[in-house]
Length: 177
Image (cartoon, rainbow, N blue to C red; front, side):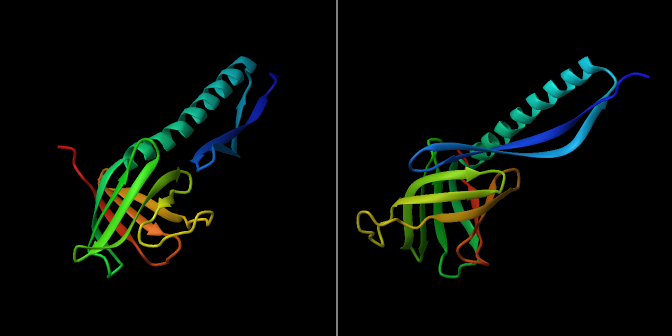
């Protein structure tokens, strides 16, 4: 009888978070299943392949979300009846700006850094410029946390504010043509 080798498959996901103070990478791992073989060399090769694919998949998820988010978006619909126009821009260097208006009067506008949590489908806006409500120096400015989803081949972005239940802002990507 040949020896039988089994090892757990561990799936790891990486979340790269950027905040005002430092970059941090969080890795969480979960045991999913077992790989079994009677050949120890085949087992080693399979584990090496699984580890490589796992690490590649983690980076791909974050990078693909980041690439899809970067660009200029115009507000196409909202559940907030006080808004009728808007624009949000995400830059490759981790900065963003948002402007929302009603009847061409600015209702809200802010800019700052953003970070993506692709595992939980959340984008966080760290506002550092907020012209309508002044914050004294040293006072922490509230952050905006948004659930996000993409549709229509990445051309539509839906943001749902965590701080206000039931609200939804739907954005359409501005074509670079």
